[in-house]
Length: 235
Image 1 (cartoon, rainbow, N blue to C red):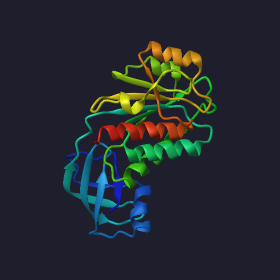
Image 2: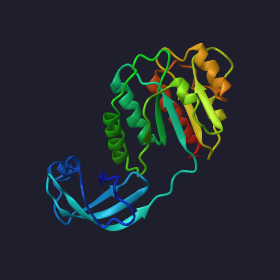
Image 3: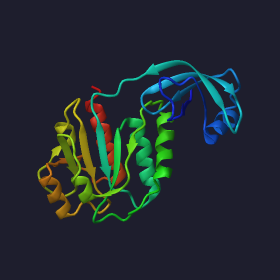
Image 4: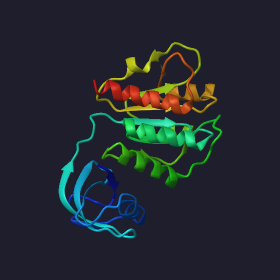
């Protein structure tokens, strides 16, 4: 069954309407009718079992029949990733990371970044669609882009890692990750982090890690990191 999204819902919601975009998808694309059962999430862990009471392509309405609350994971994964030059590759990363299970994403602008700006509204839609498609009830938080330096100045959990391509002694990420611990991982641009950025991250307590022997694209490296953390916490 399809999931729909309405961020305004809470445990006290009884009747509600959908956005024009969701209404059209429900009534026109899926051809739902009054009386049909639908599942709606607010992206905050709650799944609403609802009955459609108005199937209007411009304004669908539903009534809540039952509420199921899901508990968040014992750990949190925050990926700080430099946006790729080609936007479709960054969108692909967002989609797949949402499906695998990421909690928070921050685009970081580095010295060698070729893309400096992003359309947050467009990227939010990618994440929302991926959440619904993968039947998840928690919407990952997508932060506004910040400079690499600004990101380092923020508060971060104990487990802090940076994945870079410089040749030095690095332990594999899978051997550094601890289950049920909050984690933040830095993934650089196509040209990698600069030496100054790497040194600055070390000063802030970030530990260098390896994602394997192959040289990976930015979006691939971010997904490998996401899948590795997810695997360690689900075995």
